[in-house]
Length: 192
Image (cartoon, rainbow, N blue to C red; front, side, top):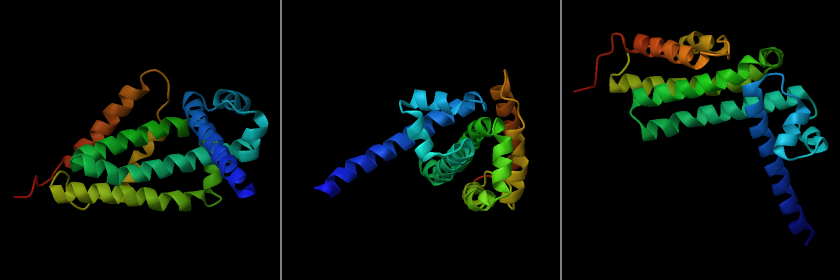
């Protein structure tokens, strides 16, 4: 019976953590300066619950970052199942751009964390997702062959430099259009 009582508590704790992460993600997208107390309030939990899951602001920022990377990486194969390769690649890049809005306000915290090894945990999976998308586009003839996933990720670094103010979405869209145009330049076209 005690075991049965722990199950719902664990599920409830997981729900609280997930709700905190979702609210924090939205709050950080709106402002990198969002307070932890405002996040707890919006998530419908007490400050003690938030701090039990995330003892510092940095811990919460990193958890949001890791969660978003996990979702981003998992989206690549799902998008390829639902869309033609070029469309899947563009949709994935749009998701990456949306993620870039969150990172913009938190760059200092994430930079400090990447020097502690976080980049190694996330870099490989992101490169894997880009590789999957690029290879599917190459096989389909939609982009020129031989694109290096590391080069593409480096090129996409502009997403984190776009000021999230007015006009940022339009600017992001134009810049991603340029990336897509560049990838398509010299593409052989669909296999016959």
